Image (cartoon, rainbow, N blue to C red; front, top):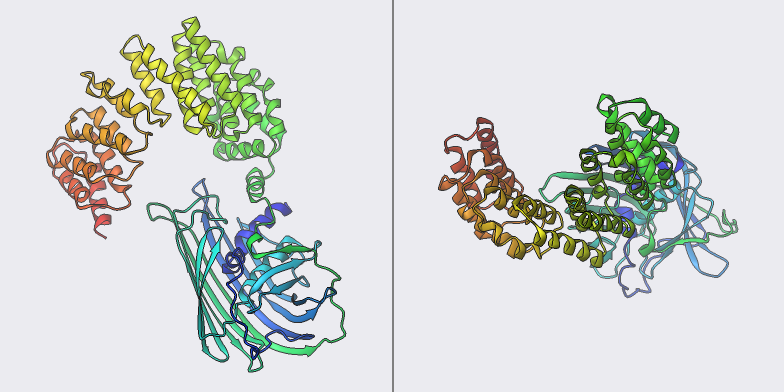
Length: 607
């Protein structure tokens, strides 16, 4: 439970502070001998602080995980010498008057926050260089201290202003440090276009962080007051909100006292975090899984799987599947214990559910259990059952070498035995595995097997099914293989040839699909081509082809939804696409619901 709470705390508390801490130290600035001492030795300065954070992140389940935190309390800053003669600033959370935090719907305890401290090492110009923590301090305390440190220890330039480009793990942070007058320093930070979002399982295409801070100093140099705010906005490729955070931080000086002669609270702080290495100190993936699992145990999984005849009768099936999948991701050693269960569950529907759980877990142990189940009498008792069970092996996210060999060998055995149904079933599975494999040699082998299937096809049905299997791979060789089939007089053959291109990247595949739209009138082929173009930005030629479909009234009315979906998913709508939707509105035989969708899309494109 603590691991869950610590991970949730990271989500609720992280702010610009933590982002800044991941940067390298700012570039050196010439140190003026007249610079005031901001942290005089053996003087403890006490501050009142208020820190609020509110953020949300979209989870893969389409749920929104929110977190809030409010902290009211006092901290102290004390300049000290340590045993090795180096100088540190002791940052201590002296008192916590109010601490309320919620993350993932759970209240978070203070967990030793009050009284925690860090030793802060500074650069020559006063910026944060690294932090040291005592080993015994809680992770919750460390997150708070890291956040405080990043806001409090801003570099102090000698020039009126300083522009910093700080390289971070997720991009470059542009910071402007500017003196308003001798006692007033402002900071503004902005960063865009990250490829990672540390606080969410999702990966937004664009994250924008805008932060500002104003620091006020005493005439003699030490910090007096601080006001900071931050806004974070993360969006996906279509511009839809995916993550956000609002944070504010205020500090007010309360008083100071001489502490010369007093011993440091702790003899040593051996656990050091340099700015470039300040990462999460918990396994957030594991904590997220533990939160999903909740109270579920292996015994409860077994009971559920052996109680029902049909998984569709469960009112809480979706929750059970989510929890059980997470359980086997956390406890892969338990996957093998499910193999005997495959023969004792009460129906084929429940066996399919069991395979789905293992496919969702996806690890090597889960795949080994699936392979064992798929060779059992229950999985091979009939062609229909085998065709329903076996393709689930292709659902795993990261196929192992053993799984790939299992399917390739099975395909070869079926080919040798003349088992057409068994070969086709394994071919579809190979196509899915080839798309997910990170081993280029294994991927090439699987595509070679499927290309050989296309060459060996004895009739149109066999060839069409070979094309569909190849369509799962995304291999560039597919373009050349299906070229002749795109000109076939058989509508279904042309449609399956287009389906084979749906995952193939590159300009050549898009050109083939564009040519299909330019001449095709059959519904099945138009639908396949429009769907295959969805996952890629359209070239000007493709946009013209989409426009021509509706303007020239060649679009099959039942393909209107596919066209509208394609247009709506383009990041940069063009005049050609707008005209395509406008022409669709006046086409005869278009379903009323499609017209409503077209009007809504036009309003969106117009805005």
